[in-house]
Length: 296
Image (cartoon, rainbow, N blue to C red; front, side, top):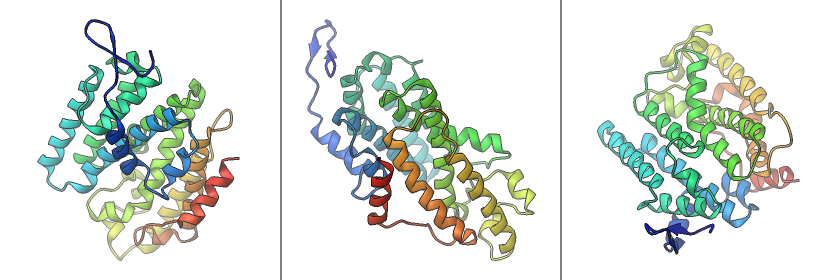
């Protein structure tokens, strides 16, 4: 039955209490006023629980590359998560995020698929883990295809899983992956200054070279005019990508996330030269209004 795990004898066993794991996922994934909270607010409870657990997993993995400065510690943390997800395919879960995710997927009827090593779910989660390894072993991105592969693994993988959990068809799932790629590219643009100062630039080297720049130029006071042209070009590329959903109307979750992305883009395009100086933010009231308008 949905929501029930099976014992070794094949008898359904009652799931463990997931109140605390679900609360931890809420804390990580859906802080009050966040775009993801607004986008997922009206989902049916079990689907909201599943996408929240997936988002919490994403946040937990992002914290490895964003907050752990010691490479060996960060890599050990990533290895721990890889083992935790391997355990999940065998029906075991100790970390609260994994417990909540496994319980929600079981309740939605994905118990068999999530325990198959070559399933859609497991493949996408492996891609997400691989993206974190790329971040930890950063070597830059030589060309557009290299950056695209990273963004698909880092963001597209999760967006395609969200679509799957919302029962989207194959075309909509592929469109969600593409939207995830551009959502991620916008997020990297918003964080470009911080990442550049840390020695990580999420722009292709050939795109930089076309403007007479290298990675170091992004946080030096010189070459401001060249940087502004580069950023304007990048933001226009992102705008075209975000607008390019193919097929039927996007599910509400993606409409809201896209509406908030559009507003970030609008503000950034008003002053592209300031990308490396400050992260553009939208007020909670403005985000709420954008979410409300996009929901119809």
